[in-house]
Image 1: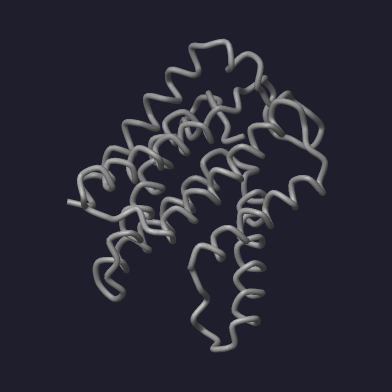
Image 2: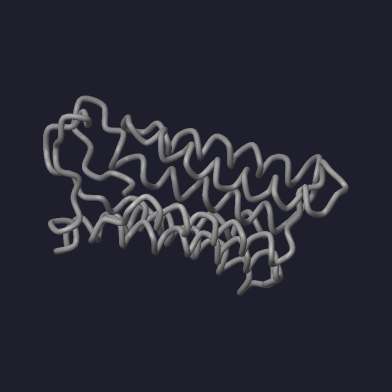
Length: 207
């Protein structure tokens, strides 16, 4: 039932992006062509909104149907994603300086760890916390750097989350991990038809 609930992330992402592309936001929040970018046309930065909505819908339905519980760990994950989403949207609208972006990333990582998630490869609590923060902030920036080619970041995220979803039903059973991983995976897949278009320029970027 958890996997079925998470399936809603795909149409939620797909339809949200399609709706936004027809609205005024798509004309205001755009990536303009610059010397360090490959695209040649103004492109709406609404893909991230669709993916975040997909995550919320997939996880929300799983909670509403009783497939998973709204635990502190789940709230920490969704809350951390929300912090990064809001910071990213503000950056698209008004442009944040690097320090503000880094503070948002550390705040998101801190919230995830404060709500109960732990790194289990080491037994020392302080070392585990430091490793957790560095890992989360590092992965956030790694995907930011990957977002330089149509379809690259979203495809890699979808593949990684598909692996986590498989792991959540095989090696390390966890309905919460399954709901989050599958929701993110399918939300990214819902974005790809607008971003990875063979023979056509991208209709939307992640932002």
